[in-house]
Image 1 (cartoon, rainbow, N blue to C red):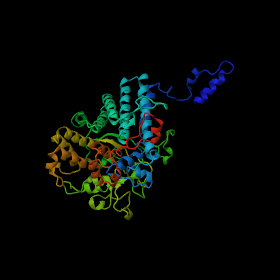
Image 2 (cartoon, rainbow, N blue to C red):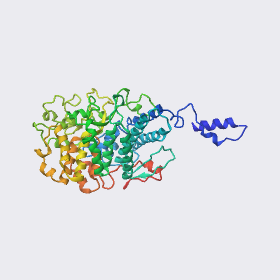
Image 3 (cartoon, rainbow, N blue to C red):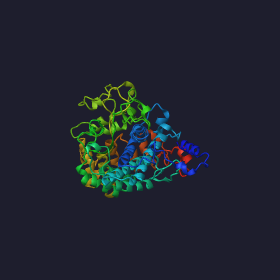
Image 4 (cartoon, one colour):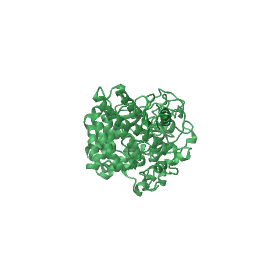
Length: 521
């Protein structure tokens, strides 16, 4: 386009004067550009929608992040037929420019951030009929930008951190996780002030005050700012938030496309099959009818049914079965979380133990497949419309318990939060556990901390939470890694001081003199 403008300008100037450089900045009013788009309140709204639109990318939340986040954690494993794909989830990083994971996740997240920065740069120049609407949009975008940056930091740690609309010539400086989190704290506090506590049905999917509190709490927790996190949890659990959020009675409702946006959900990514399209040819920026669904189900479905790029570790089954409910049954979370051999025997009261209508196949052996976010689709389709619950109230309760414990040890409130999660699935209180020593656990900060790792592992398994937890608890000493090896053989490949962060795409390092490759790569 610029070449066209230059040629046309020079042609019109022939015989009069030489080409005038001042005319090179002319804007073609027949096309939409950043120079002529941002004019009306509706334009600002469209810009915000474009930030949400980046959820529907392979490098964000339609597919690849599930394989990576779950594969690196100790509750998941990738046995994908694509060797490089499964090796990336096993801490074997050979090609730093691996397109399916490293460069795609990086690129799509930064496109989302570019869009968010553009909204924040332009919105104050637009006249709004309703100032509250303007502030709401700013709050939404600050939440979304923080959301994207939170996951980039979780994956790579040391990242470029542009907060203004960037150009191809920009060389943004690299920031540490601590520097990134400090800005996210500021942005999310501002979002809390601007976002409403609830939304109407027509605005479901946009963040609320509670979502911002939840994400801010997670940022604080990753930075080990436990006292600050407690203040967020106090609003969510004990304050105004208790009017909006609670545990739902049926654990399985958190992963069903029939019970979305329920009281347990602080924030979820909205997926839809309104554009029922084919495979990846619609994963682009140009098609107005591109998919709005997720491939999480196809990505994790058992071999022979789906792609089976990621599955569960067997220890989960064993840990779920350690402890019986108060009525002598197995923990129902096991049923809703995974498929495995003999599930029918463990849950004889359930008639729906088949795997997509199939009996357990002999060649599946002792493998464990992920059931969360599955649907009753038959045959399995490339996409499904099951919303991903990014921030869940049960997560907040257990984080609240963790934060309280770090501040003052396992006080009554911390124990209460754990028991609420346990009793929802009819497990006895921690004090009355028939398997764990409740007196020891509740009597010591260290014992309570270690036990929370189990409670969180069982309540939040295979939800892209575990890797975040492992990083917060510490992956910088060999003793922690040796313990993880007992549950996950992939940690035999883990190198302390290196593997807790992915390599930055080498093409980015080569093109930006302000960007250094992560340590020991």
